[in-house]
Image 1 (cartoon, rainbow, N blue to C red):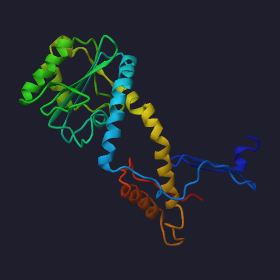
Image 2: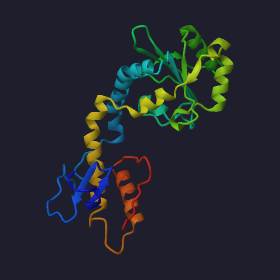
Image 3: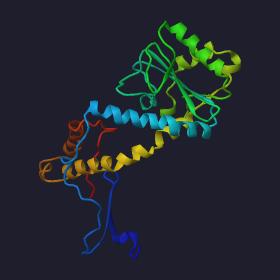
Image 4: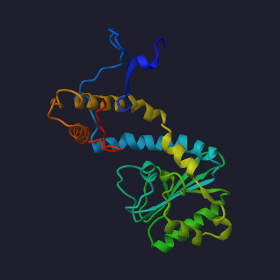
Length: 271
């Protein structure tokens, strides 16, 4: 950079993926990428239409990404156990859509095979279907826990990852009661093989597959379109609109597109 940072006014919008740095006193138009004025021109799939591509991406992740991440995390088996309306943060990223919650007590078992692939098993009252094979279905809760223990013992894994973490909330989805019950049903030699799966969970959530990366330009473009609307005279009336009004517009606009937001938008004025 030929000018000191102190001689530049830099406006960076991370959400929109747009970064503009304009030198003070410069008459040169800043160089930008694509310019968006609105999100109106983008087609967003309906909730029903999203099922097929979402499930295709989930299968791709399970078949190509998970084996590598389990090997990197030195885990022979990974257990994801949760209950209805108290879902593990990672659960909905692993199961086929449409899904809104776990069903009663839902148990997923991932086990590395000799060829490096990962067997995907469900131990549930209600089978999940593809891309999972049902290792047990029906019966009562006690029978379900017994079946889970039998699945684990029969495969004899050396290191069994469970979602417990002192520091990382997204990797701490196994409740205390479920953790205790798991240890109760396992023979002591297998209970001693339980280890935190924190590294695996974090890597799973932070890594994007090739198919996911292909849609990222569209995702970013929609976000930039909504931001462009929010900061335009289409929305803002000087002296009337507040920063809270603009933040609520952004939230409502995404909802109108059928896109849930991760956190509440924040807009503030800096002088």
